[in-house]
Image 1 (cartoon, rainbow, N blue to C red):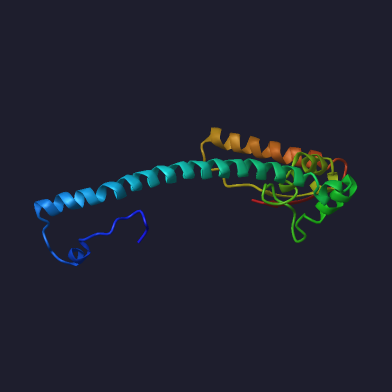
Image 2 (image 1 turned 120 degrees about the horizontal axis):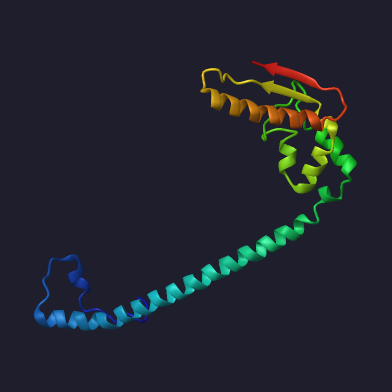
Length: 175
C-alpha cells in the first residue's frame, strides 16, 4: 500500500454485506479525509502537468515545422537546373495516351506542386503538345448550364493549346 494511505481496520468487510454502524461510519469518514484530500491534490497536479504537456506539444510542433521548412531548403531537387526538371517533367506524361485535363496527372499536376514547378511546367511547351478532350453529354441540361460548361471547358482547352506554342499538337477526342 502507498505510504499516504492509512491502515484500514475494515478490509475484512470489503467482501461482505456488512452494514457499518454509526461509530464505524464516523471512523470510515475520518479515515477517508486524508486520501480524498490527497486525491484532489493529485488531480490538480495531473491537470497542471497535462497543461504543461499540451504546451510542450504545441512548442514541439512549432519547432518541428521550423525544422521541416528549413530542411526542405536543402533538398537536392532544389539544386536541379530548370532544363533538367523540364526533361524530367516530360517523363511524367502518360505514354499510352494523351494527357487529360486533370489535376491528378501531368502536366496539370506539376503546376500544383510549388511555384517553381508551376513556372517550369507552364513555360515548357513540350508538356502541352498532347491533350485528350472529353466532351460530356450536356445536351439534356438546361441551355444556360450547357453554355456555362461549354465555355468553361473551351477556355481550359484554349489555355492548354496556347501553352504548346508553335509545336504540333496530338489531339484525341471522346464524345
